[in-house]
Image 1: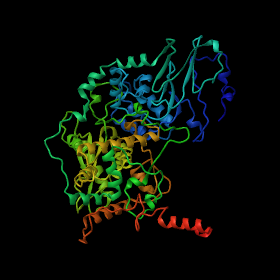
Image 2 (image 1 turned 90 degrees about the vertical axis):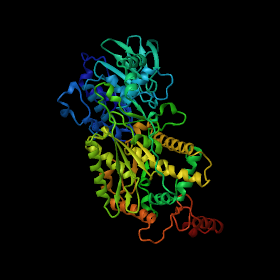
Image 3 (image 1 turned 45 degrees about the horizontal axis):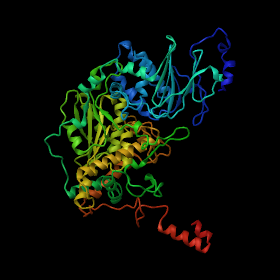
Image 4 (image 1 turned 135 degrees about the horizontal axis):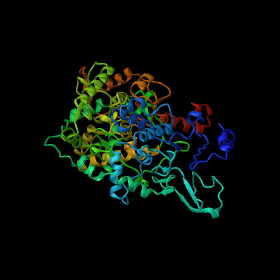
Length: 631
């Protein structure tokens, strides 16, 4: 490793006066959070990258899964020679470079490949032409954005271009001189240029692209370039003919199943609901359409150290932007965010065809029970839905239940299904539910391994998720959409019990929107602005889960300390189920417990700040007793 000034001395060809080039790309960085190495040095084959791709885990997994569905005339019969498309041992920049190189070698033009991997924010942009929106939406049905702060230079030897991420979280400024040179750098003054020679001073805008064609000697601006690609095919007609909107589906002539009061209480206990979950989480979201405000930080034990039963969600902690990786303001910068997801089989991204966009568009991945009923009963060419129960008999091993889930999913896929609904409806005294996060992540990893992930979408119909963090983990580990039927039934119960004075459908709508805005907020802390990119990106760290469980079902997740095994998870499910259904006839109460997770309750969850602590602190202060203070 050496400084830029030493490059000329190291590479002898840079000292040769006969060595000329129309293009020069230099990457010089101060290594902030990684150790420098030759393997990670830039330029890569196609790009130079300043920034981070925060969604890289999901992007790489989906790119590997696409290997089964991608076909190209340029690689006819030779595709098996170039796979795997992505080297997962490389850096985020290297994996993006692998993808761009593959797309270009498959016949796609480099500027187009960059446009579809790093699209500008188009969903909420009212000033963009419909033609350009149709172009972006067509490719969005097949490729999720590679999201995160990024300034990228790209070149194939003839053209050279630059693009900025959709949020503009990396600086890129450029000069054009009177002798026909364009100099772009992450800051002004990288090269000494006499002011009288400068014709244009400008900066790259968020999501915009700059392109120089050295063969034609021409500078192509963003509007001209994108209008050219947007006009190549009738993308709008293709979308009108093939894209299905969930809101346009007919509601079937069928009743949504609701549970009786006693059944609902048993299910709430079986899924680990507490009094706090209902009163401080579900109720405020249904009432106000936003999360309730709580004090920052928590003084209760980590899930792995708690004496109370904990949902698997609580073993995962959200990662957040660090060092040079800024978060975004999801409220003020709403124009760059997108909550749309596409469900169905991904098309062949290497060949433009109307059938590629035969998918379902969902604006809010938190589904009502009516939405899930519409999807289950849809009969549209190109879509086949399979409902797979994630239940297992009491006293069956959880590992066997997961293997059976894989078999059922493979069977459904072989029968042509491209939408899998994982459902835990049907929990009773004999049937337990696989924890929803475990079921979703395990199946997601199985489909990635079998290269079927982009051929099927996973929708979850579960009574377990109820808090924003639960939904964030489910989306982060592979679910495309979630129907929290029990949380929504709980809202109905709150209205019936006069604890919520509101129309049921308005309350459910507000609850779903509160969850959605919460997920956007969590993603924005990591600099991610689209739910489509967040889905499957695994932006979490596990605390207190054993290596065997992580390696098998949450592959790639960081878990530094080890912890619970699959047997422990199974015992926790059984403990909650036994408390709910009382198999021994001991007369257990179906009332929801207050476990003291938010506020101290005697004999319940431990808290760092409890009445004893406060009393001793006051006494020590009053009496000046240092020994008492240390206790």
